[in-house]
Amino acid sequence: MRTFKIGSTYLYPLADVKWRMARNFTQKLCPYTIEGRNLIYQKLKSNIVTELQELQKLTHETMTLEFGDNRLSKYSMQHGKCRITGQFLKAEDIHCHHIVPKYLGGTDRFDNLVIIHKWLHKLIHAVEPQMIEKYKRPFNLTGKQIERVNYYREKCNLTSI
Image (tube, rainbow, N blue to C red; front, side, top):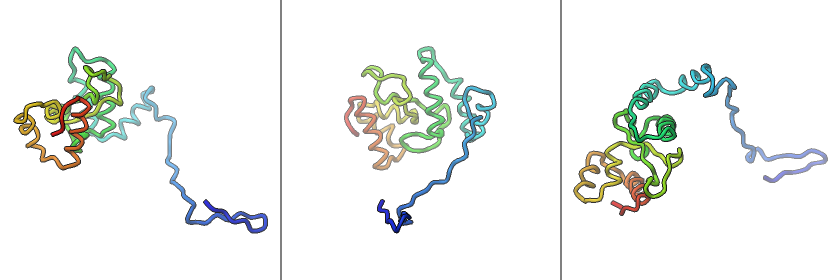
């Protein structure tokens, strides 16, 4: 940004001045208190809260505590939407996919998880051409969506579709 000095006064061109609206922040917003959690849940859409409650019930014995917590957090962060299609997913339709699979050294960390539709998860791991077509057909995937599927397939050491 270029400034001009006239006497002892500095002038700044208005075109270069940028500003942002200061967002209100309350220190009461905290996941460790009852009041703070209530504020967090009020900001979530009611359908997401309902689906989060359903998702908490859908567990299995091999699921780690870290994976369970991160799965709920990822669903909330993605606003209940599939990472590939952008469609809202009900709890029974989701799959929390490991971007780098555990058998290839992946972990249950938050940044290694993504929420996708359960059939798209099968598409990502499908090897046979007829199975790929079976799971691809119902979604009418666009070019960008197929790129995302191929990204996750590459992380699993599978070929692109």
